[in-house]
Structure formats: C-alpha cells, structure tokens
Image 1 (cartoon, helix red, strand yellow):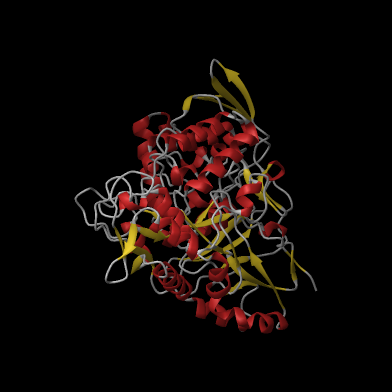
Image 2 (cartoon, helix red, strand yellow):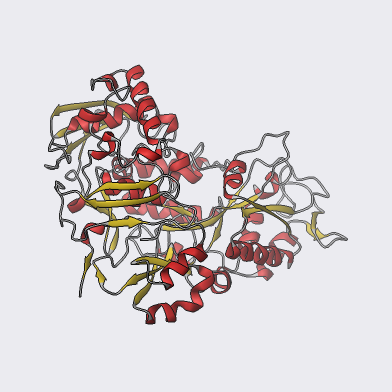
Length: 563
C-alpha cells in the first residue's frame, strides 16, 4: 500500500505530538499496533463503532453538576499475553496530564483539563469525573482519543531501568514520557526495540527502513479482535514524488495505490490493467484561514460583509472541475457535506453563499468601497454606519490581501491563481505567497500589532479533518476562542456559548443545527472545496477494503486475496 506523498509513517508512540499528527501516523500506522479506546469509522458510516472498540459504550450519570463517566473494558490482550486493563488506560492518561502541552489535540480547558478525578476500581473499569455536564455523544470526541498503552512494559525511565509505577507522580510521568519520546525519535530501532513489540492491534511491525520510512507489518497472532488477519504481510511504501508512486502503480508493483490529481485522465487505462479505481472521501472541510490579527487588513476582514463578498467570489464548482479533476466536494460550513451524516443540517447542505461576483460587488460598494487608479478597492466612506467601511478602517485603506499556500503542488497553484483572478473581478487585490509545507505551518500563527503579517488568507493543504477523534463535528479547535488550531484568532461569544451547550447536551440535535447554521453564515473562515483524500487504485483480486472509511482508518485485518 502506498503512503500519501509527504506523509510517511514516522511516529510510533501513540501520544502524538502536533508535529507528527498526520493521518498516516495515527490512522494507518499507530492504530494498526495500538487501538484507541473507541474506534471511529465503519464501512458505511461515520461515527463511533462500538463493535470494533476496546470498551463498551460509556455510561454517563449526573454527579452534583458534573458528569461521572463509567467505562468498562472488553477482554482484550497484549501480544505478550497480558490483559489490557484499566491500569493501561491510567498510564496513558497520567502521561498525558503531565505532558499535555506536547499533545497534538490539547486545548486549554478541554481534555484532560476537564477531568476532576480519575479512578480505577478494578481491572476492567475506568471512572472519570468530568467538570460540568456532558452529552454522551460529545464525550466520545474526547474518550476516543485515549489509547491504552502497556504499563507493565513501558513504565520505565531508561532502557535498562526496571519497570515501576513512575507515572503516578508528575515528575515520574514526565521522565517516562521523555524516555518513550526519545525511543520514538530513534526510527532505526522501530522494528527491534522491545517496547514496540508489545501491541494490542491486529498487526505487529516486522521491519522498518529509517531512510525511506517504509514499514512492514505481519499479523499479531494474539489479537483479540475480529476478524483475524488473512494477508500474511502488509508493506506501507513511501515514494519521493507522486510521479514515482504512479510509475510503481502502472508497473503493477502496488496492490493498493492512488492516481495523482495530474494523472486522473489515465484512470481508464489504470482500470483496464486490473485495478478498481474509486475516490476515497474523507470527513473533511476545506477553507481559507482568515487572519484577524493583521494590523492592516485584520479590521477589514473582521467585517462580516467583507467576508460575505469574498465568499461570493469563490466558485467552488469551477475549482472542483478545473483544479481537482472533478474529484472534490463543496464546503458550506463547519460540518463536511460529504459523506452524508446526521450532523449536517439541511440549511448547511444547501449553503448560504453561492458564487456571484454581482452580489460581491454590491456588498462592497454599498459599504463605501470604490476602485482606485490601480483598480484595487479603497475605502471611500470610513465609519461604522450600515453604509460605511466599518470600525478601525481609515479612508484610503486598500483591500489587498496576502494569500499563502503550499508551493510546488500544481493543483494548489491553480487554485491560488483562480482565486486571484476571481477576486480581481471586483477589485480585491491578492498577492500570492507560496511557501514550503514546513514554512507554511511556521507562519500559521497570530501576528502582533507591530508585526508585518505574512498572510491574510491561508489555505491548509488537505483541509481539516474530523478523523480520528470526532463523533460530533463542531470544529471547536478551529473557531473556539483560544482553540488549538485557531491561528487567525477568531472569537465569538455566541459561538463559544453554542459550543458549551453542545458539550452539555443542551437542546440536542436542534442546538447542533443552530450552531452550524450560525457558523456557516458568520464565515469565521472562507469555505473552499475539498478534494477527496485520494483516487484509490486497488488490484481487483483484493477484497474487504471497500468502502473506504471516511475517518481514514484502514482495516487490513479484513482484506483478503481471491483467485
């Protein structure tokens, strides 16, 4: 199987840092070896799959204004024959609490900060007293992030030291985490290190190339789940480029590969060579991050009418057709439109702002913007009335935005040029800022009032996904005040209130719909189409892989060869 380009499997320790939180690392590497407490994803739907989970459905009861969550583990075993117990859950939680700032999904006030007390009355029971009241469905968002790890093997501070209960103190938990992180950073020992040989997933790592990041798995014969793996070996193969991957696919070297966007016209030929070709749709949204902290353009972008005008200038259907080879879907709000889910409101499914340069021009001109000598819009009527530019926008302010995106990717370059051309139709200037992927993530931060901001709009390559840990798709990390992924520093008291209500289960689905409709209209970011995860090409003699899971998990224990 081909790993996604620029996303090699290179982090094995399942307390993942932000730098290593890729779909390949979490969904297609770590999860083959170490199972999350709750498994999200099934062959035909998004959401929690209790049959494939390590624990039964959690029981939530009220406890003096807080929530007591009781989790009962199923009878799973580690590959060394020992049972997966509540002590293994405690071990992971203790390491997380002592090192939470390093964790990829940490948001202050959220998990694990909202754990008042954790107790483990017996080997199969975990009790978490959570601050405030929570709906059971929302809690799965947090509980599915827990990954039990083998305390009886990993609770050590050095390779030669004895196993202890070091994690039971903050200092000890930091020392254990430091040791495990250092071991995880030594990629050359992944296949030989005794730590990583004790797993509870369907596969074990048998070989790993630290240079190419190529990983080879064999079945874990002690796996407690079902079905038992049928294939004898799985190689997760990396390539230096999409061209190299496609050459391997055409040569028949891959059982499970993908057709790069540039090569979509070749899909019929690939199919004729014995492959099933099908899109792999992930539960993602596409968007342009908006920088509200730019001291120059931030006040402009803070005006809802400006964001509405810009949204009217994004022709999602044309971008799908001309830059995604037709393999994409529109984003209308914080909940993905594809695949369908109960969380998607009828209003968001339809969308609020459709492509209309006329509507965009009308919005801007009615608020006092007119083209200057260079054809770029400038504020002619400063002020805060309904027909003026808005707060903190001086007369003469030019509407000229910096658009940052990943360089060296042809479809992203085409999208950037299309946006630049579309915005220019009404006089909105766009300066393109191509950056390497590392540099792009480096500038994805808020600006101070004295800095020169390098971006106003930023396109996240690959969008933002609700895999692997979201049952209720609120996207709170993106738009909650202080959210971990809220780089543009959007802040709305109403949004924060809705999020608290959803956390607590107030109003049920009605509140979820009201929240997502409000967000769709308020445009905390600009909605962009999202390309499918990949155009998969799978040899026709491999079965059990379809339909591909929207959370991007893979389940090779279900794959079988025929003929």
